[in-house]
Image (cartoon, rainbow, N blue to C red; front, side, top):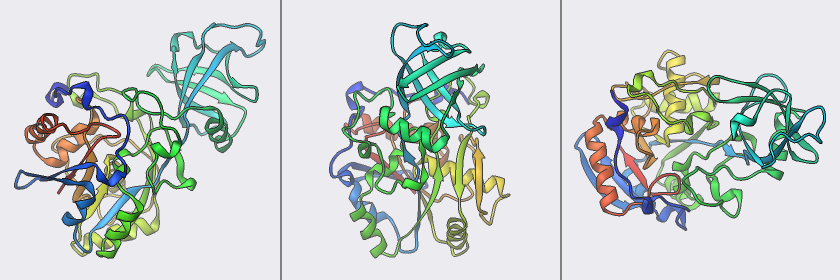
Length: 355
């Protein structure tokens, strides 16, 4: 399939800059993928489309301030400046060796081995290696937890490039269920923005179960599909965790014929990626990397219904949703309708429920 098959026109004024408040008052498009029918509600009314016994699976990863601004100097003599303007380092993920991180840098052409990026008097990184894929490996003196702690102190909220400015607080770019123990994402699993604690309470009262997995959103979220044939695109790996409790809950739901409802594409990638590593059913606990690329024709083994946002043209996320909808042309007709009806798009935008 061609990347151009997943294109649509979006006026810039429909790109949402902040979530609506309360968050569950966003708009919701409801799609029945078998009947190819479409309905429209307020998000808080999603409870009408969920059944007692449904199992909601959500990604509890927490975002940290991964965008750092600093100055390039020599790692041996900091009085020697190699670039007279501030540079940006975007923390992507920690590597196996202590203090080593994969990062994106801007402008990357100024970064070379032997240079140091100083972000604060007590916070710096040394450039180790520029990789062919455009990423850079840097060495911090702190361990992973300490790096994230200082990044939260000195850094900036890593909102997408189409969002102007930052939310006033990091909580403005988190789900209500983001876990302090699961900090590690450089972008939020934004489909979860629509849920409130009050809405989860109503769902539980209806007999709808909830379990959690973790996927730390990484580089794949930011990389455009540059190949014309989507099969030639290479997905970067992301760290995930499915613990025993979540695996058991999912296995019980599938065995009993109850629906597994994924909140967001990150949850879909986690469940379907781990299912393939585990060899299908039953779901097994897993901690490690996945690099699954979901495109039309994909066989979904776990997910029965999906809560998602409206995604960028030609993106891997749009391709995943097209695969789940089972008809790319129909999905794009829904997107075109959303444009005509003035829906809000992307991270802070409105939602879809596909079942």
